[in-house]
Length: 113
Image (cartoon, rainbow, N blue to C red; front, side):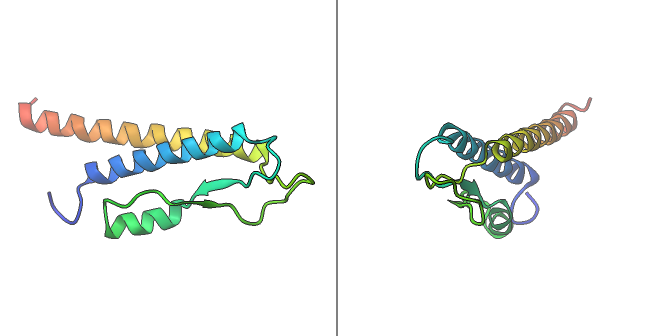
């Protein structure tokens, strides 16, 4: 394909990163009451910058900084995590629809319909 990576490869990578983020946010939610648990997140901006130069890059999971810790040392905010989960679900759905549209265009080009 043209360029370093095709649109299909890029969309596939975005879907994989959204999947990783879903797992990480779900893990945060599951540990909302675990003493000492530290919130994790996927560095989307950093992952996107690396994806532009290397399509095989994996999502970068790191501890979220700047969140308020409770007395038990846990810094998970359930409302924040549920918002991130909703946002991530919408992003995943968008990437899925874009990938489906790309495949539909290719199928039309191949079949001539």
